[in-house]
Length: 204
Image (cartoon, rainbow, N blue to C red; front, side, top):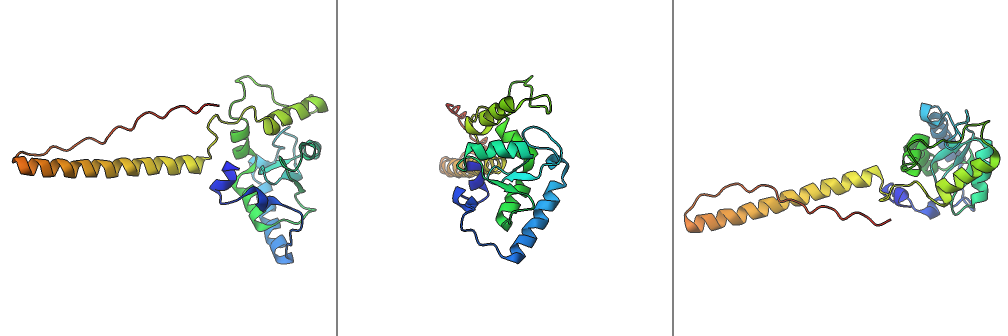
């Protein structure tokens, strides 16, 4: 949900039931999906690396193979909402979300803290039970997401806001020093930018 919020979306924006999609919107959205699927990062399933995924978990922003799409359906729509990339109708905002995320960017979030020598599913050497356990650990139990799960844009915005606050505080302090120096007849020296206290680590 935090990743969606950064893009101005909400979970309810991905409700399929009752969604009315015009022919024109379907056509425009399909062009976005087709182009996004051609990107190198999306030519393999996000979960098992099978080639040529033809299904998508829309709210998660990933493309998956037929077998993994079945597992995603079993997770429930509160976790993963599955669509065919070409048999189902798409809204432009769904297609744009897929374009903005995709398999590489999404996996950088969902697999951020996997063990260093973790062995990922490798079909056909991974059985269905092991594959399902991997997918449930990844999306249902969220075992490997960042400890402070913030999207890159949010992190960048926060840093820029902190830098601006520091700049404004430095200007304010310098003005105060200039006023005090002029009253005392002394010369003012430039103040260094104030140090921001170290951030308290988030508790998992």
